[in-house]
Image 1 (cartoon, rainbow, N blue to C red):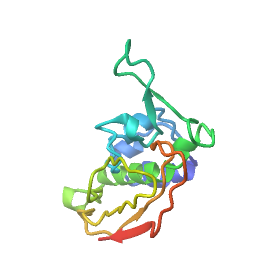
Image 2 (image 1 turned 60 degrees about the horizontal axis):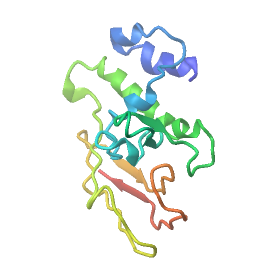
Image 3 (image 1 turned 60 degrees about the vertical axis):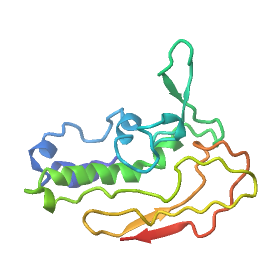
Image 4 (image 1 turned 135 degrees about the vertical axis):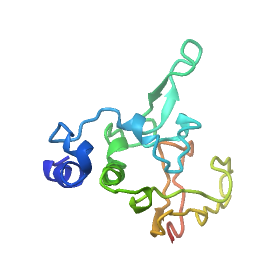
Length: 175
């Protein structure tokens, strides 16, 4: 991450916490762990194997280490090991900047709050080839009344489909 972005969005005019940020670049190291705290609708807090911000995890040794997961990058993707982080980088930076804005706002009501992603229907679905699935995020809201944009795509890291799925009308906005 460029130093100019960090200076503008974290270190300058973002409260004493931002001013104390020690680095000239972002290298927190725990992005996959932290990002699961950001409610993005992937349900990582319930099951890391559904596919999370940092990729898709698998239980690597369920008998001896029942709660230990490992990233499964490359299982069905193009093998680019950092792609799993790159696809979420802009969202992670925007979230970091928004949290730093909380440090300068004097009241909760003046701070930009995170949207609440919701869908109609089950989050996990088992479907058969050729079955039509409707994705509907109309219950999604933003506490500040900002417009929320959604983009549907097949998340190969997180599914078990062996073929590409056709997605019609893959964009959605609500407010």
